[in-house]
Image (cartoon, rainbow, N blue to C red):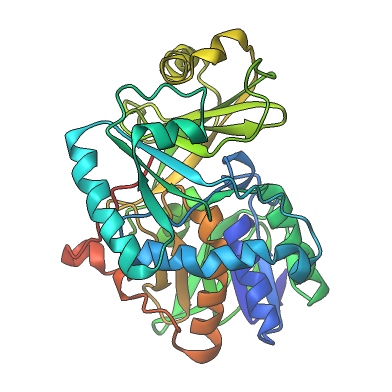
Length: 380
């Protein structure tokens, strides 16, 4: 079967949906989104929903500054409550290396107008009384940060995009990206060939595999992260900031009456494995109890795993790659959800205007070959 489209977006997670919505909002028609599984079945439905300004690179901060107002206005714009809990992010700094890095970040945030501040141990304790702080050198806190519901954001974008004529196809795994004369000409999914002049790769952890179909090598690799959620915890009955024990990589926030615990296994091999490694749970629990002793009274209710789409410098690729008409928007290294509003808007600018209102030079695909990587310290 042969059909045609103006734009084919590969990936039906929050990034692909945001791009589709923003393109359609700019008047682009004939947009088809192809998703290999169900919409949001990749990383979107498996993350902790964090939204923050506290990054160490200017480009990541600016992506956050562009996205944050859109989360606040999401219900007014798209008609769905995103469940945005603006409780702030609290980073706990306990090592020499992180003390230097976060001191540098504080200077960056002041320059860029990020309302984050340095807290001493007592001030951090006041924000999260149940958290052990005796080894904390200082903390950083930004009240603008928080977390939202990824599924609500996804459904908001998908619903609005559909109303503007975007077609979403689930169970449509892409098997080929065709080119001729140095230009994209078609995408194949199952027995369907979709002729098109523009392809946008927004396939998250699978983006490297998809780009390879078009002859483009991108160093985007999957890395599993685990999340566990406890039952209600006696003594922790009110909101507290999204708290990051930076040295260990443990993060936690309130979730459905209990506490969400997230962490990565540093020995985890690169693999497309989204199953839960329950043998890793004791490691997470040990770290969590060391930081929040009150958790000893809670039971873990559920757990799941998802994939970060890691790049060597922990920054995404946003822009052209390979054949004319091929764009990539992937490799966010765990920050795709929080940067989805900005990413969708910027890709729409590239397609419609041929330029962007935010300089994306630092995120070009060619930086990996040239060695011009961008540094991001604040990744967990």
